Image (cartoon, rainbow, N blue to C red; front, side, top):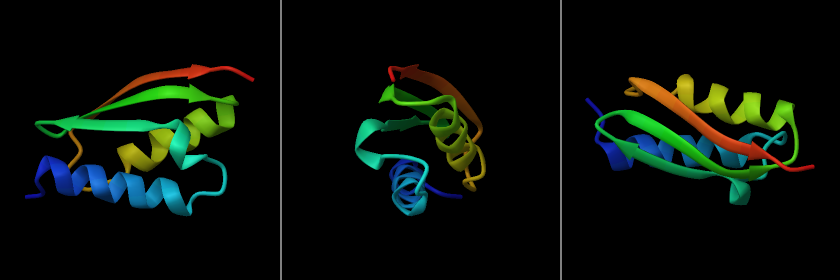
Length: 71
């Protein structure tokens, strides 16, 4: 089982590879396998990509999408 810090780093790494997401715009917090995504992003596509990256990461129980879209 992954620790919260390992989950956070895995999500950050995935966001760094995804060209649809500006990694610096998304803050990732993990507690007990529950991921909270916060920050301001530029589009719905970026939001979907960030949430998808978090959801697909092993060890994640759920994702709270708190991202704001600000074009």
